[in-house]
Length: 509
Image 1 (cartoon, helix red, strand yellow):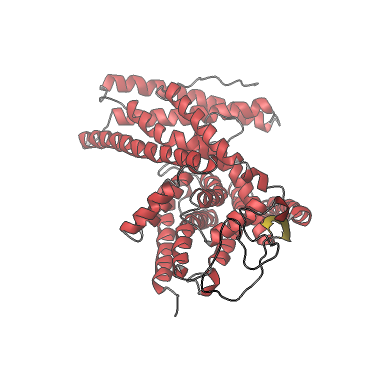
Image 2: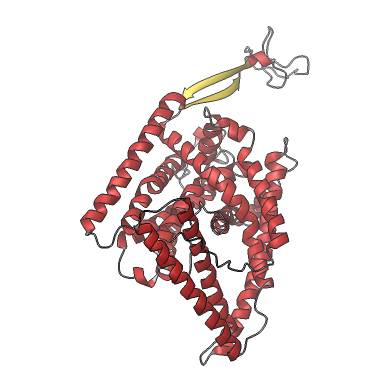
């Protein structure tokens, strides 16, 4: 089989099956009881989307391992690679784009449709929205591809004469070329006039991936920059704000009565908003009130959960309290570990990406040394750092969703997550997973060199007309680091405080 590595194929198949089964497990345990034994199509989309996102992240370590098949070859085409990674990359990310822009919106429109309507009418309404979205996306993609769907590669024209193979070579700083005559054969000493621009049209699939990457990069820079700081600090401050002891029964009754009063107020506010919606009033004030009710409801649910923690009931109350204490200790440990990873990420971005030339390969060298210890150790660490970024994106979206009016809250809760929240978060994960891969292939270019991912996300994406300047001047990396710093300052100043509900709903009715 030549360079064909059967073991790599077996590992790839096993990992895909494990990822699929794990995502089914997440769906079953996170879904809301109201969605049990129904909403099968949205559930299928959720499992498929999570699987595509996870596999796409794991494909970069697989790409690096796949490249090892040709590590002894003089040039890339001198051997047969185990897996056709470039074709797999394009297939996965075309599927990613189809899920994000067509399938997930259709599933959300169908799930959130009027339950009083028949299934046929709900499908028709969802299809109408999806077809409209498809037409708009197709027009935008077609126009952009026709106008600016080209890549401009900057190359240097070098030349040299030929001569018979000599017994000795007499090259020096004054004689760098073979033979006589005027030639520019050294890239270091060639004149600026030797630089040429080589223009070619990119393929349409690569262009779709590139545009999806840009959209994802904007979200990734915002949510990822915030999440890389709030993810570990949120866990640490959760430990700091933890309940220190079990409350008495009288305290429990008092707090439960107060929470019941807040719940009745929220119910009144929700009913008033429902009447306001029926009257056709959906202006800015209405949306602000809806956002306030969502925030208060989320805070109320957190307060109920905290009250249940500080007053465990039942025959195993002591065991429940012990598990609660251990849970907060686990959050603290995970927060410390996460903080180390976050600091390492930010330091690596500054050292390797923002400073030119890089001060050090930093994490690239760490992965290479881990590979020297054990073949897959560096690959596992590499995959962990990529997955951590994806988790940070979700944490950042949750934090901003609680504070910004124009971002909808879609919390993920064990045993209480509705399918629309599932679909929203899966869409966000899929959209940002492309950017995470592009970001990792750039940040770990030394470790992941000569891979198919670098060919797509490095050479093509960073030379695409109208887009290349965003990468040339490190716009997304700078935004990521700045937002991470601002979030760290915010948490250091206010993160230890427990946010109290305002109880204010500016209702017009």
